[in-house]
Image (cartoon, rainbow, N blue to C red; front, side, top):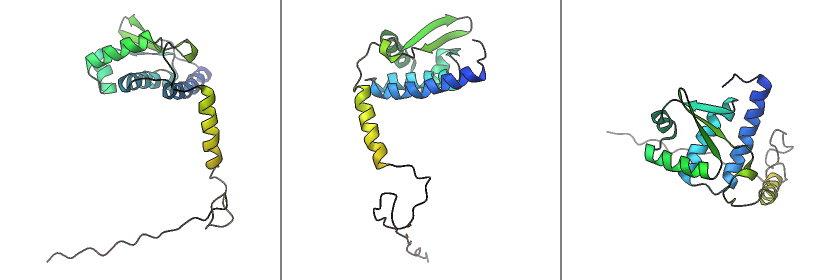
Length: 158
């Protein structure tokens, strides 16, 4: 693996964010998701196209999964064409297929469904970096209830 340039590292990090969203969209099991997220962070998240893991024990430590669960989940992820594995001199090299159109697993929802839902959430959650005119109202003019918590005095032990 070569050291990436700063621009390519930023590109891999943007790709990391995109793939993280795709992992949520697809129907992955819990262990598959843990393994895929770990490999994603260690490769694209660190600005590299792949990650070299020296031993299965290291991968088990990173994921909290047992060796048999890693093997089963990795087999599933390879069959779904999400993860690629190559033997290297110093361990195993893992990379991810960045194009989810090439994955062979079923999405839970379409990109259009997610975008529609996100747009609705965005409308209900405008940016908060703008000060509101009245501290008792939020940015939408809705009243905001302000509560001061008063803790009861502690009981004295005799």
